[in-house]
Image (cartoon, rainbow, N blue to C red; front, side):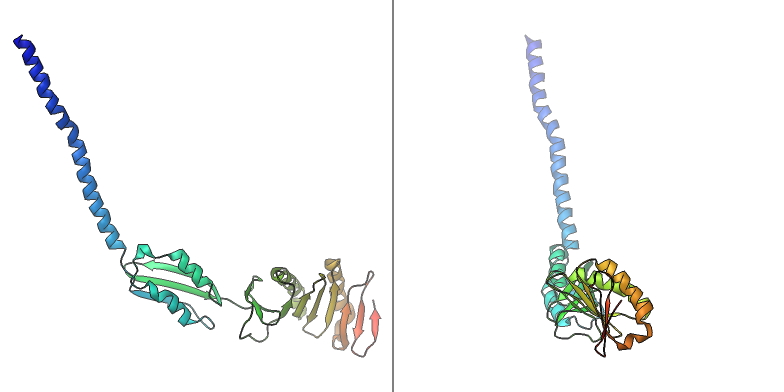
Length: 252
């Protein structure tokens, strides 16, 4: 009986020890979490320093410095981790004449902005401007740089007209010429004027074939008589017609 009681006492005593052993890892883990949490808070506090300095890089001719400053000034005092970088970049790129905008955090307190301006490559319609990629970046420009070629076309055809312009330039520039005006009308017909004053009526059908014939005519027929030519009409089934400034027309 005594042995049985002693055994029960030992078992009962062990029942108090086991929970204590089980709690040790839990308490250790809880302490580690508390220490780790404090370290995380401290790290966030160190990293999330408020912006006190904004640096803007770029060569500006038409981008408004006042607009850039007005957009970025409210960010002064905002913590690094709370800055909406993607949202700010979208707003910056939406500004007139801004081609690209890249924001960078410079710890501990600086926000840097690199801005690249749009480069106007052609005039679109009356007051629009296209960049070298054929993108219409301003529909109504208050100031249009001089010397730009003029491109025309229905809304939404900017890139298509720009591609045709580039194709023509690739052929004409080696000949010492260039396109000064290119038009795609509502019916899909092309016409253009080159730097020697000649207007070309290309039409809407078989344009690549007609252009090949036009380049041959330019090299072999027009030549030194270019100053006397008013237009070249490529819309004939077999050949072309030359309209002279004197008023007569010759078919080739």
